[in-house]
Amino acid sequence: MNEKRSFGEYIRKKRLEAGLTQKELAGRLFVTESTVSKWERALSYPDVSMVTPICAALGITEHEFFTACDDDQAHLQERQAAVWRGVVTGARRFFAAGYAIAVVVCFICDLAIFHALDWFWIVLTGCALSFCFTNLPFLVRRNRWTVCLGGASVSLILLLLACWRYAGGWWIVGGLCITAVCLALPWSWWAVWRFYGKRVLPLCGAVLTGWLFPLLAVVWAFTGGDWLISAAFPLAVAGAAFFWAGFAVFYWLKAGPWLKAGAAALLASLATPVFNSLCDLVLEERGGPRFRDYFSVGDMLARRAAGDLSWVNMLIFQIMLACALAVAAVGAAAEVRRRREG
Image (cartoon, rainbow, N blue to C red; front, side, top):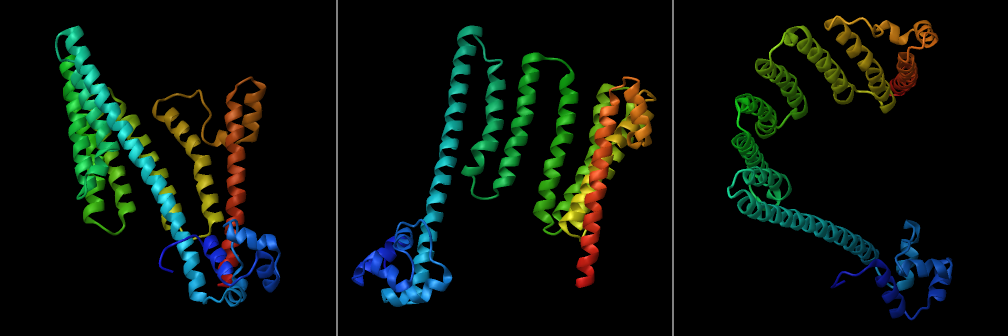
């Protein structure tokens, strides 16, 4: 074919060239007339077993038939791509217009009402930060993510300085330090992605785990207290342990979906009891249930009788644990059967 056309139009054209009505073509193919009508209206497609009879009836080759199918699929993909491009273009224009209106209006209001430019800089840098995520990725062709991340980092620091210029105070020192530590995470991920093509996910997970402790240390340095070593670090270690256990389930565990789902559900059912018990331990609070109490039916019934509403949470975690063990058992049995058959 010289031009691309829908599959239905192609079948109709070839039928008319062969001098056949829909009823006659249907009779030759031993199908109903409505079936041929649906083909020509692109409401359905012939079964693969019908390809040879259709080609014989219409006097075309199988190559022409499948080319028509490919053309129809190409039209569909082109229409979907055009719709998506329209949505993206409309969103970009909407955001750009919104930023422009906000900047102009705030500029005029700040000058007209307060006779100075003070809070206007907060609006301007805030719009610049949003622009780096909504519009800038579509304007940059080379090193897109490097430019966007750099622009967002600079805009965030300028936004913080604009807020300090308007409000004043020594909080800016802590704010800049915490912001610098926070920006270290996406820049570290960018470096892993840019320079290490293999095992990006484990390396990014390791960076996230290591980054958490300096962040807590910087926050502690500007807030004070004795919570860093006694509470924050132990809870961070527990969180990292659950994170890596879940990562191992989905990334390293070579098993079927049922066993992975059971292992993930088991981790989810244990996470809250572990953290609550650890919080009670490091904070020296004894009001809540201990870890083993969460899964004790006797303790749950005793708390219910005493009117302690914590029995509801204990019941939920007991049900979660039972379901997780059941799913894990099904997954383990399926895995054993699969390995025996393999």
